[in-house]
Image (cartoon, rainbow, N blue to C red; front, top):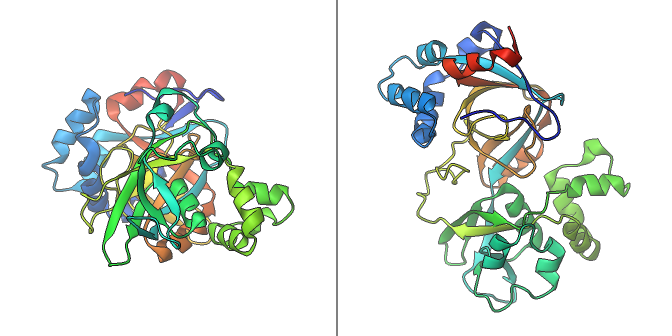
Length: 332
């Protein structure tokens, strides 16, 4: 698998030493190796397949990574940015009621055939989804449904205590635009005040203006039911495998191969240096130094994720052959 250049900026590469990774020696490399094994078998490149086969018999995880990989710093001229995401839990119903009246949709065939398809406003106000039978469930809160779409997966808890799981099923093809930035543009908040919880509270306090605010994001995400995923496993990521709390990240696959180990050094109020695995993507995750950390499931994970917006850097661990193939554009 090759790392392609962004349409906005050609990437540059620097091959580092493991001694350049702050806190590397203190991490739980065995935990990262376990997560790596979960998805490396789905990587098609021969170099990755070879390392995946070797990983099955490894007893010294740190030695495995140091022996077969090289840390590669990939930059595109933009500063590093870490955010957090989580698996929401929504209240819902398998049938519509006066309380549960906001549908969670599967992706219609027309949306797959036409790119981009209708905007969020068109989907929700034109009646185009009526009568198609694509409702997976109905939920009671349009704001939580909006954030479910941002996260890309979640659980819906039914009144009888049972639940279903939904995963990303596609999008309408329009770019994501931040409603938090829109609130800043309107002068409602300063940039440092905006978080997921602040946005949710504002929309609920201002239901009419809030509904209109949500419609300013043209992007719309559809879902599919994935209830076969066991309750003790994380939601499905972009590799169609369960992701792991605090060991999986979403990245931009234009720069970082899905399935690759990635060393992160997140700064901010709660610094974090850890070996993660790139097992997910996101419409808002764009750039060589951009990553979204999977925090876990439920409201507390959501509160933690919503507060993360920190600088730092990420370094991709590449198979040795792949790393040195980048040398014409790299600095040693």
